Image (tube, rainbow, N blue to C red; front, side):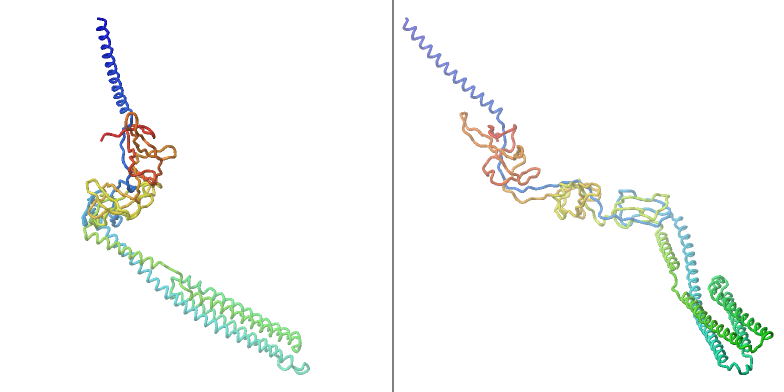
Length: 545
């Protein structure tokens, strides 16, 4: 029995050992499964890709509006009452459409007033031309008189100088003859008395001649005044220098005559009280006569010089250039402007006061109001549709760096259609120094003026051999790097490990980065994205495809 019992106990122990061993392996299998589940839950799941050859394109997108290439201003004459306005801002019009209409009755009244004003200006211009002709005649008359006066003054003063010279030479000869006489000889005829009497007669003749010249001058002045009494003051002023010279000449001759008469009277008085044969007295008288004649000669020379100077100046004044007078030219210009205005008013009357659109256009602004008066400026401003339109937008300074005049762009309006065009101008924005205004000519028959559109421009770079998405690029301090995966055998099997590789960025845009060749190979799997943060050396697993 004991032996049977021992055998039973050994069988039970073996069974228990097998069960325990089976349980141990079951637990180990369970733990392994649990470990893999936990590992799968904690290890980052990622997507990978390969480097590729590509260009780094710069895309510039900007919204703007289609505006007109040219504005067309519609004018009319100022001061006309507006009867009716037919258009409003934003309205499309065709060539010949009526924009607004003037008050026809007020237009007729304006034409009548303008015609009367034109007639007044015409009459005023005629008066100016007539006055200009009379002034020309007066200037010609003054020139002739100045030439005649110069000739007369030359002849008159020439004669006076010759007469004075001859009288001086005669007095000098008498003095020389007296001094040559023998003092002891008979005195004979009283030469002193004869000389004094001759001098008195000469002085009287000179006085009569000066008085006659003065009277002749007065007659000449009166004749000129009678010919043009309206300019009496001007005529008399022009003769003032001559009148003064003539008066001085009469006064001088009168004084000379008085002195000659007084000398003769003194001599005759002396004859009554003294001997007429007093030689010294006779010599003194003859010398005095000679000096007097000499002084008269010198005076005649000076008078001739003064008279010729005055006559020459008067002739220069008469022949002086006319001063500039633009009155006639101004009147002609005013009359011409008034005639042009009258023609424009009559043209408006012929078209019944209707102001029409010169071209197909879009009304930008209306500057006239029904019942109000027009001004000299623009009445209606409109976009000229016949000149086409242009797309206009504003870009930043950074965007402008990737745009150039002549670049191809795509324009897309509110619809689905898009249109190819080229950049026309790029100019600094006057209102914002950090912006630029870009214009693009719109192809004919595509986008209408006022349409909001989007411009897309793409600037391509040179091809790069190593390009990755920006999501694959990382930065640590000053170092840029990417993560690739490497296979590694472990006790748990084959695993993927992340490896950090430093790179140098050559260029990039908002999607791709171009890297310097050499750091990566074409067969390396680059981590593009992951569900968790990944660092170099981390275990990772690939996303199930």
